[in-house]
Structures are given as C-alpha cells and as structure tokens.
Image (cartoon, rainbow, N blue to C red; front, side):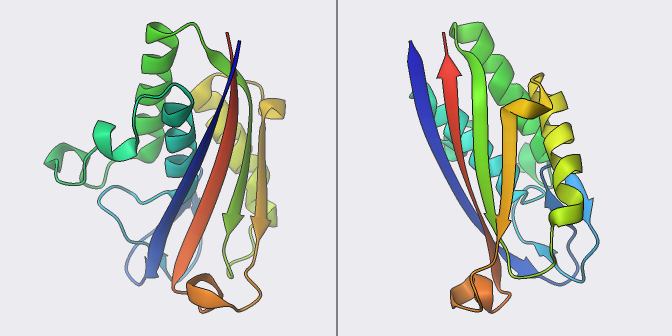
Length: 158
C-alpha cells in the first residue's frame, strides 16, 4: 500500500537570525523567523510525513505555544516524527521531493549537503530525497526578500 503526503511552510526573513534549510546553516545576512529554528524545508517535510499517515500537522506535534520547542533544532523534530511513524505504522519512506522558493541567496552549492543531512536524519539513501531551489522572479513576499517558502511531497510504502 502507498500513501502520499504534501507539506508546505513559509517563514519571514529577518535580521539577527540564522538561515537554516534542511538542517544546514546558509551564510546570509537574514534568517528565518519562527518559534523553533524556522527551517521551512524541514517543516514542510515534517508536515508531508504527518499528512501521509493522517496524524494531523506539525502544530499538533510541536505547538508554537510550548516553550520546550523554542529555538528547537527542526532536524530533531523530524527525527521524532519519523520514529513515531515507523514505530506506530508499517510505513517507510520511498522518496521525498521538495522545492524551496527563495529569491536570495542562491542555494545550488548547499543542496547536496541538505540532501545528505536530511537523508541521515531520516535514515534513507540520498537518492531518496530531492531538493529543488527556485526564485519567484521578484514577485510577492518571496520576490521582495521578505519570506521563504518550502513545499514537500513524500511517498510512503508499507
């Protein structure tokens, strides 16, 4: 049996925060604002996994009102989610496809590190995860450099 999950996340870009995507710190003069480390890519993957097994969403697992998740490393949250899914269901990851929409900085030189880091956290092969980076051609909140969006789709197999 197969299950598909879709995830989406958006965070504002602000000064005095680190830009962390896929658990990798990207040198930049702005970072993502959020209760945790605001890693939009990892959050989108978490939501896709939770959605695939109909367990709710990231806010149900890690509410932004809970102080224990303040500045949390999103890769640790991801590890908790995949452990819960694999122990409570018979599903495992077949593959994940993601897109990051960011105007700047360019991410090409960081994508392989993000893929390897996420593959390590999820205990899958690097070939099972894809990351694409796109701009919004100067349009909207992403185009103006105000925010970053990430989308993820996961296919789980039993």
